[in-house]
Amino acid sequence: MARIIIIGGGIAGLGAAYKLRRAADAGHDVDFTLLERDDRIGGKIWTDTAEDPEGGVYVADGGSDSFLTDKTAVHRVARLLGVFDEETGTLEENKRTFIVKDGRLVEMPDGMMMFAPTRIVPLAASHLYSWPAKFRMLADVLIPRKERWDQGETAQQHDETLESLVVRRLGRECLDRLAEPLAAGVNGDLASEMSVAARYPMLLEMEQKHGSLVLGFLEQRRRVERMRKKYPPKPGAKRRTMFSSFNGGLQFICEKMADAVGRENIRTGVSATAIERAGVGWRVTLSDGEALEGDAVVLATEVWAAAGLCATVAPELAGSLETIPCSSCATALLAYDSGDCPPDLRWHGILTPSVERRPLTGVTLMSSKWPHRAPEGRVLFRGFLGGPRDEAVLERSDDELLALAHAQLAELVGVRPDARPRYKKLFRWEKGMPQYTLGHLDRVDGIERLQGALAGFALAGNAYRGVGVPNALESGENAVSKVLGDLGITLDEDDAEEKRVY
Image 1: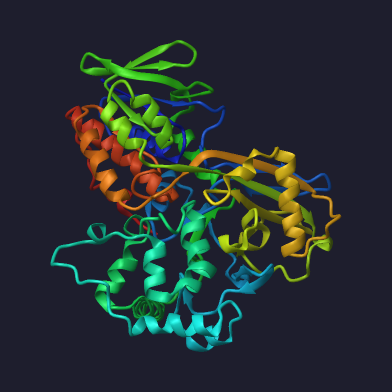
Image 2 (image 1 turned 90 degrees about the vertical axis):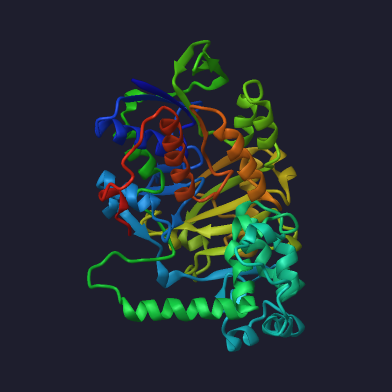
């Protein structure tokens, strides 16, 4: 029997474990143990469910709160688990986003696709940009592409930072006011360092194909509109939105995966302190002094933790992992009486550009973005602090950070300064946000080559080829395919049920 040890109980580790469970159920002679250092599974997916003293329940995500609908991995697993009907989309009737400018909220202009304008009138009417900036953005259609790629070349071979691309194509004000908080800030990156090829390769591809980002996004908008006309929603069909979650919060899918994996195969509250070769297999030493031996190891931890565990057994690989930086952040959850909040709460989020120099980098209005996230008469906010632009703020205590978030909500949103939160909770994510800096994909290629030379060993997680929940889940599944292949076990990847998509 092939025995696999999975280190890390986030969505990547659970994805690996669930694939092994399906392999065992399909008749393959495999067994596994999943180790998680915390007392809970889910990693950076953490839904806090709390009762309001006056009745009702808060469903509050302290980490990731959603996944991109167009990425199919979570849908596929939800179907396999029989919980696809529990998926929910955002409340599109409330879909508005505001940008902080000079301490005030300015609504994002209609027709913006990411940070590029595709409609002239809304751009002209917006107070987000100065008139010189508006003309500079539209000049993108006249500026020649930086270079023409040779046949067969990809974005990876022509990587540049977000700052370089946006300033070159659309101007500095476009970067500072929208592109930086929208494309870099939400990912925990700095615009001056973020790899476009790793995060958004389609932007570089657009410039090659259309010679312009604006023209590229215009074509994308037209294509979306054509598809909507060709495939109108069927009566009674699930509402399709850009982001999806579950009725019980995002941790719901982690719990269902853990149930399917078998809780007896999951050990929480214990961490791996070392990994080493044991003959042709592997030995994992645990924090309680126990040692486990297996035929393969899947390392589904944060990248900095993976580097530490690899230091002895694979020092070159550890050195490569250490080149991927990570930033820390915190999430503040605060709920208030609706009477203590402004009357207009029909919006999803607020982005704070770094040029505003505010400690609160963004806000999500959870009770307006998702259905049934707060009791009737309550308003649930989610504020973000820290990140690479201001990690020093995280030196404050939890109470100080919650008070800081409250003060920012009062100043920006209009929450009464003396309002008493009905619910509050702070989540800290130390070194929890891997940064995809310039040349990231080249580094990952090198990491994967070194990993390939280690039989029965694979890495998984959000530090390599995508930070989203579906990417992390798939990385765990791919890690299982790798280690089982090393052991001579080939899985049937053509299972019809697994290929069903949303």
